[in-house]
Image (cartoon, rainbow, N blue to C red; front, side, top):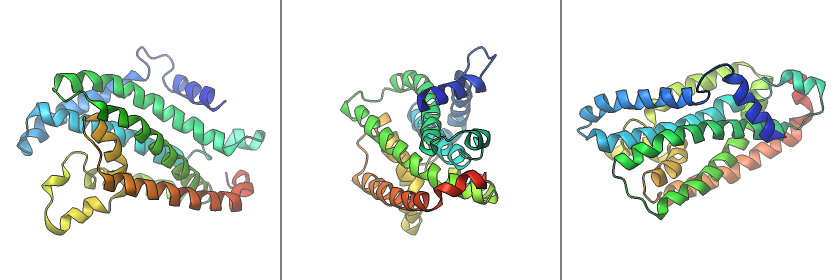
Length: 244
């Protein structure tokens, strides 16, 4: 059911368009091509080296931000469905995650030729992107569950989340590399959860082995996040229908 709901939402969003979800992929491609020409020269890097780094980072960032933004409104956006039917809240979250993964798959088709033309190594590390995506989806589940309940109860949280993501995009190593920071500024990377979420997927997409630090932090965040989410869900599950 959640698979059909997620796919139906994708079709609804791009109804009567020629290339459908590929519009997002095309927009991403134009963005990274334009930014690579400018930012690569600013960072004294070749476009061939910087382009796949930026593209893979933006792909993962769009997926992660979709989990956060769409997850925060997952209950509010399905208000009519929640009030009319006895629907599973977890099914709504799974549909949102599946919808975001479909968009990521379309972006991945655009990234493949960039990867090949950039001369990046084709090795077994690429396969690590699969478990990394699974872990990222698990985190998207508890994030959507917590933020969805918060936004249903306090609508101002949605604006706070949107403003936070705008700032987080620039303080997270998406456009720049962590190696460019020195001294105490490196704490901006090590204590940035969004960076570790991006890194466990971006490194395999670049043909690299993700760091053990990123996997450890993401693993702990997954366990702690679901513990908090399930506690809040058990306590406030019956109130969600009244909040929306």
